[in-house]
Image 1 (cartoon, rainbow, N blue to C red):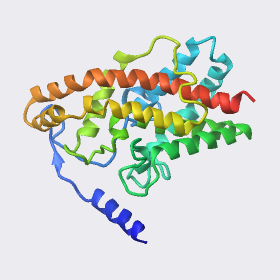
Image 2: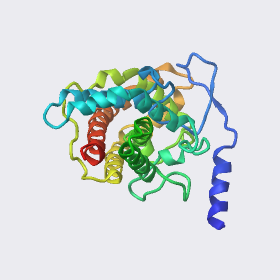
Image 3: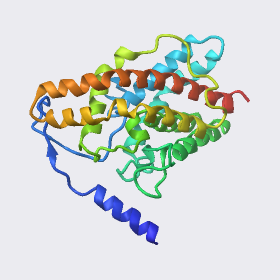
Image 4: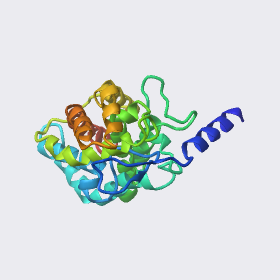
Length: 283
């Protein structure tokens, strides 16, 4: 009971009303700070405002260029059921049980202690692996629509932990409030500069268990956290409320590490999809 009360009190604190933050470079008068944010997934089928979809599509492109490790009939299947993959990617951020009553607790995972930001809540490693396996069970039962939907859900959780803020439990309520969401919006504007153009996914990267892949992705992402969230970027983000020049500064500071993370996310995702086919599709 004490655990439940602690978790409930943490949730109440997290969903309490927050002040409006206005940035000098924003066209709107201000925005409300929400708990959420992640690689963006604001439209089911539009890459422009859905970095999760962009990463998965680029991963499929990587697979399509590889004729030695990847069976091209698997790429055909991915394309045939792409709409269901996209629906799974999107639903993870917009429907229960995937988005945890708008707390998104299961979308975070700190690999150092195995936690999310809400005590005792499910985290991304176990949740992503769960839907990887449910996708496989549906595939074996020839329920292709459900299989690729669940695969999309699992890919969403993998994508989350490739984002350093998610691997460090840095939410949109962390100081400075709103940095998480503004960072994600910025990523959408630069991601096309970091498309992988070869066929080199991370094949056999972390063994045969999806949990190990999600953990490994989080470890790599957390190592890059300080390149995105540090004293300078925090200070500049706060000062961006009154100065465009500071908005430009924090964006320039995070760009190199963001590019690195986007490139790695594409390669890891290609390998993770291939792992799923190796586990369930090649039998």
